[in-house]
Amino acid sequence: MFHSRNAGAAQVQPTSPVPAHAIRFATPVVETPAVFLLTRWVYRAVRSVVLAPFRFPVAVSTLAGSVATVHYLGWVWLAVAVLLAGAGLGVWWWRWPVAFRSLVVLRAVAAWRWLWVYRRHWQPVLVVAGLAESYQERQYLPQIRKVTCTEWADRVRVRLVAGTAPADVENRVVELAHGFAAPSCRVTVAGPRDVVLEFPRRDLLAEPLAALSVHSPVDLCALPMGLREDGQPWRMRLHGTHVLTVGVTGAGKGSVIWSAIRALLPAIADGTAQVWAIDPKRMELSYGRALFARYADSAESAVGLLETAVNAMQERAARYAGRQRTHTATADDPFVVVILDEVAFLTAYHPDRDIRRRAENAIATLTSQGRSVGFGVLAALQDPRKEVMNLRNLFPDKVALRLDEASQVDMVLGEDARERGANAHLIAPDVPGVAFVRLEGSPAPVRVRAAYVTDDDIAAMVADYGARGLRSVPGAGVA
Ligand SMILES: Nc1ncnc2c1ncn2[C@@H]1O[C@H](COP(=O)(O)OP(=O)(O)OP(=O)(O)O)[C@@H](O)[C@H]1O
Image (cartoon, rainbow, N blue to C red; front, top):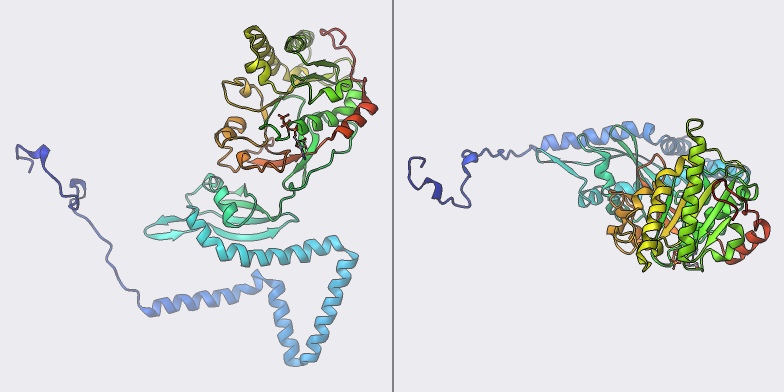
């Protein structure tokens, strides 16, 4: 063929081997003798029986004890033993309910869930989710090592197939959650080839959360905001960072802002923190005006407030230069948080180009230089697209409330957030305040719900703490 003048135009039959595969080897089909199959089944059965006392010590010893009682003493004594054991468990539950729950109830739930949910559905769910690996025509699945239960979730410890990575599982969390009928699935890496899948059994965030009680002293790096889906408190850092809260109208941006202000109240009262508020809608923040050291509701005054904050920040930075590298909140040098409701009003929607430019410059300066000198920005936004807010990358921390489109999730929380299960676009409209956040030190987004601060709560906050926020900051003059 190579000597032919038409070699380049040679037609190749679609079914004939391509030149690189001139000779094809096919694995010969050999029928496995029945004796091998039977031996394998018997081996498996014997191994299960031998390992059962180690894997299920309580169940096996109960069964063995019952059989021995019936054999040596008869049925009556078995009934007596069952009654005594029941009474013993009853007393345990009555006197030490917490220990009883964790040592008996949750273990029983875990055994049941292992058998009925995970073992039963493991193979079909993982194969359909695309987590089965093939090698030399054999299929390999991640193996369940252990199932444990906490009050709110099942934790399935899994041994990965060699050669796969935890990221493969993280990319399938949505499929896994739906496959095992859980509201979500979270993956944590416990070690090499060792991951834990956490499936909530019920949604702890389904019910609204009342405003949290106010605690003193205030930890500016961990303000209590609401609840995490694992039942732990959701704490948000404000000092040393900037936070952007994004959500469609009615998603609950107000509850994030007001929960943060509420948590700051004792610090506002002792002068170690100040809130400077910008409220273009005149609806969200005006109600608590007396709590703020500065307040602006028109575009001109808002830009003025931002530029004043920049001046104060730069004055502080000049004072600290060469003397101190971090800020500690004091009454002389308070932590200043600039709260901007609907930041796009200033950066995108305002008709005056000069206002937009000045606002953007001031926000960019504050967010890029303010962290270490005690100036933070907490901004709220409805539309995270770049045309509307091109400064979003200057906010290290983000809160994604209900969003309009799937593509917005990664815009807000970072590139792989949606793959890791942060389905902010699927948050139901009837759970305002529910959001996804990335907690420090963990790449996996966590679902949270902000506590709801009602108008009555705000009125009470103003009555208790109002007008105490009004102090001066060097470089900013008196409010
Ligand atoms: N954390 C929450 N828990 C329960 N309900 C909430 C919560 N946050 C908000 N809501 C309810 O949702 C409504 C809308 O909330 P909110 O005004 O905070 O939304 P928003 O995102 O600020 O909307 P907009 O951008 O239109 O101002 C509130 O009036 C309240 O009834």
